[in-house]
Length: 178
Image (spheres, rainbow, N blue to C red):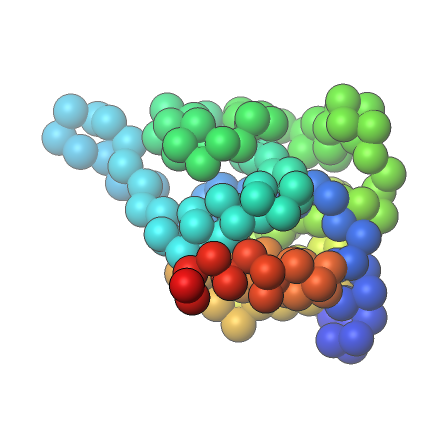
């Protein structure tokens, strides 16, 4: 159930790892192929810069995707995301692996999703987020719903909320005002 903003902020304060779905969250959910059969995806630049800012604030990020794509691996490397899990059939199982691998507690994790396959993980993390164009079943169970759609700045919006809740957003953006 979507929480009042103050409760969402309280949950966001504890986050140390932001886990991202790809199709429908980092992208608009469309899958495009060129004439040679190579997959193409469009990522929002502000989402990418948000991930870079998150890393500067020691907020780790991970990708957890049901599909496998070279484009996703390339984008993850470009952004410094080292926890990348693709072609995942059981996202909850991989989430448990992530907890063990990082030593983090559930309340220190956040997940952004958009579809029913994300529900098991959304129910387990400390701070659950749906993009604006997520399916109703996802929107009904999360702590926060972004104003932006997947692939259109939703990741950045979530990162800003987390970093503001943690009191570091102003410091991060100060580097651009000098």
